[in-house]
Image 1 (cartoon, one colour):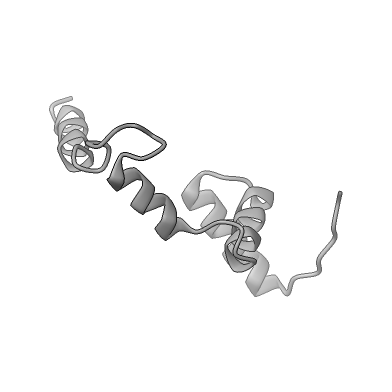
Image 2 (image 1 turned 180 degrees about the vertical axis):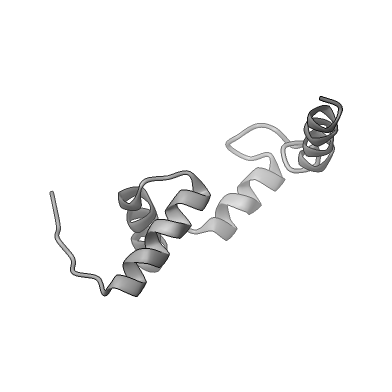
Length: 79
């Protein structure tokens, strides 16, 4: 269902800026924000799930992030 919301120019500019930084559409950004505010999405619960190795079945999922990111960044620097 489509919903129309009027935003003041400053708020719309911030929305556009943040959505672009995250690489998502404004609609995706707004839907995500609404889900979090309405309690339908809990980022802390997702983080706990990842760290526990629960449904995702990868106990090392968060442990390897730092090492993988460093490897990617070093590869980019060598170019």
